[in-house]
Length: 272
Image (tube, rainbow, N blue to C red):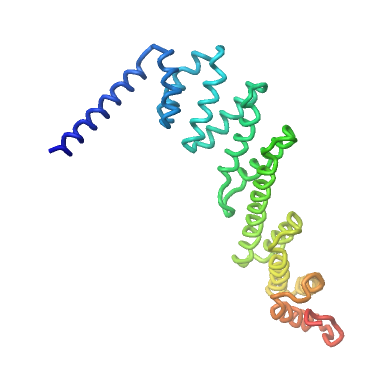
């Protein structure tokens, strides 16, 4: 009986609260709405705060309260993890109030919103590149900021994601047995990220893709493509003489040399 009474009281309180909020939304008392914006925000009721702000921001656009209300609007969207809208509001705030005490934080949080919108490596990385640019611009604008180290760390993390995306994209053509496209994609990945942690694997895949392209070529193109395979082989063993791909690399060399009628007894191999 006691539990039932408590439940009924809670339901009555919720209904009453909802009713009061609905009345507030329909009210023309903008000062009350403004006060409630801060109250709801402080209580963690960000959606209610946002809804009220959408009603009153035009009313206070040219007033002294506009700066604070716009700041709360951006912050509330950030709190509910609506990073697309929060980023837009932070950027607008920073441009509208460049002398604000919150201007630096607004620029940083706008970049952070881009960072949070960066997807996993296999997806399109437009937001990742945008985040890198945003953090870079922030550091240029605020070279003595205490957030500089954080920005640098996040940029490195984002760059690693671009490296992985490049690797996955290059690898995809190889896995699909599109060897001509694979050689181009793998070469582009190595050129764009020469210090990638995937360098050895990418170079091996490029060699193997070139070899398989030669194997599957029409007779008139075989010699040229086998010769290119040989060039790739020498580039690979010069950089990775003790490679984990040594057996496969030796097999490619022996098959290529046989086709080109090269005396392998006088040729350096990856085992030398």
